[in-house]
Length: 302
Image (cartoon, rainbow, N blue to C red; front, side, top):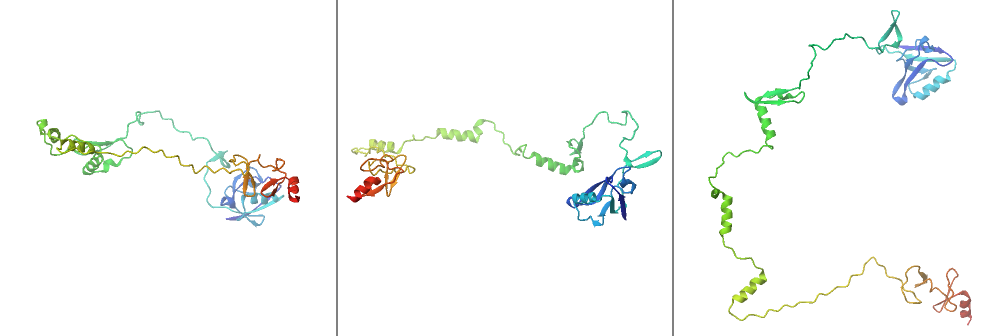
């Protein structure tokens, strides 16, 4: 049922809004303040808001609907739909009439019954049993066990399958031995001890034994033994070859100065005439030698 509700301002209006497009729920009234303007205009909890001041509310978010209601200064027009089914809540009666905006939270009084014969004074365990035969019985303490629904034949099959891996089966035909001499293991051990066997010898010892037992001349057996050769350790592939200084001919460790295709120590990077270090001063190469600017000009003009 659709209704148009008009609330005369100003705010507050006295109702709480819930739902919206961002909550995937329609905008509705969740609470009414007793004695407020919404209460006097007959707004009720559960009313679905269809329009706010003529603007459809089906696509509004919760925040947009709140801002739209705030913009209505002195009059708020709401088009609502009131469902026929209302949620039940306990009512509070005052002076014989039910109050529509109060909820009874008090516990209902109950008759006090002391513990008597109708109560279980001592808890008894839950036991389910099934008969295998006249003398044997399978008992299960599990709650709601269906063991009583099985027949005796099914119980025997299930019990035999569960105990098969736990209890080894006894062989049917067992021959009792009257003495230890009848044991196959004992006979096998005795046969191994009585059987003669030759002592174990290495191949070279057997060859010497054959030479000793023979009547002919003994051959001269020589063996060439080479002295052990110590191989030099292979150079590690991770070690890099040191660059050689062009001036002194020694390897360079540390800072390397590269002059064209040659290398020099930082201390060997000097003028060939005055031995002045050419670091950050510039150098000139004349006839394969390094010179400073002054001596390079003198060599060029001479």
